[in-house]
Image: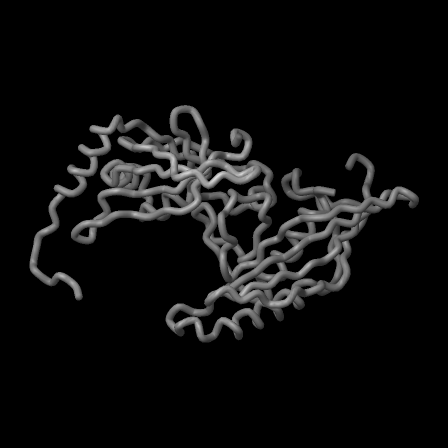
Length: 161
Length: 144
């Protein structure tokens, strides 16, 4: 299942670079695309703004198949305060831009499954696929607008996983 | 309204802060810092592919904040850190700012216990910090 989670994140990350290369974040001294996995970073008291944060939640397993299928629920959280030099008046527009980016980087709804413990990552036999995201309503907290989207990510368990 | 009277910056506030920290049994803290070249796919998905080293800052003083206990909640602490010590480490490590140093820190170790940084603030005089205040909470594996 970890390979599916890694592959899903790397697919979204690669697509985000194409869609909006200017969405970046400085993490541990390195400039990276503006998307990160919450459980793979140092804990933060508040999620960083203007980036996508992946949080893995539910898990379901179907063993009544030729290959065991796992379905993992991923919540993607994002928030914005708008542009400081604009007094935050564009925060609604920036959140809409993030909505559109999120819809765009989910397509196509599949990616090859890779094993990232190897260098370079090793290709596996199956694919990781997911359904359409479900968006939550916008939460307004003073000048902060936040929203999240949930998606179920499916993968088949392969030999050795 | 700002004070526009011409005054040359002096290091007196920093020296005074250091003296106060030492006078209340100032101790040493270790910042567990990651290397800066961590932008690999392995480090982004939680595979440890990075280096860690400890940055020593001293004198520091730790104090427990007013308890607001709740089930499963960790205690919170404030760590008062000498700006002089931070400044010397910035020069030694060639890091541009204290903010950058603290953002590289995964953990703070004081008296053998690990803490996570919640937030950072600084006290300044004449435009130069003389004290950093780190809001800490106990790292999860040691929280009670």
